[in-house]
Image (cartoon, rainbow, N blue to C red):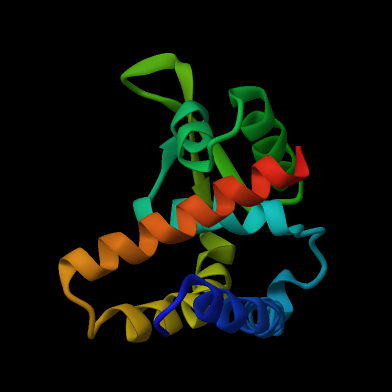
Amino acid sequence: MSTVEAGLRELVLLMPRLVSRAKKLPLPAELRDFALAPRHIALLASLQCDGPLTVNELAARLEVAPTTASLMVGDLSRQGVLDRAEDPADRRRTIVSIAEKHREAVHAWLSGSANAWRKALAPLTSDERELFVATLRAYEQAIREETS
């Protein structure tokens, strides 16, 4: 791939296949009755990777306003997917976690994607991984600007 245009062609053909395959990751039976939207995947992935977080920490990781994160947390809490608990160190803060009874199902669901990324990233050097992630972030930003 010696030119930007050659890379562009490859990526324009590849992206729909990537999205299609990611959408086909099977949702465990225990989670099928919940109204899980794409926006919930990143929230659940953050909790899966980082453990319990406050709503403000979730908002920062998801790059959304705290009120948006709070609405998503409230939605998933009402459905029983998430648990909310008072922070013992600061009662004004709420700690959010994946409900114990759904933790294994969420892990099973998200691990397919995580394992695929792990396999793709493992042969790269640290610098190559940083460049790859930075490139995906730049692509997301450019798409956001195109659609604004």
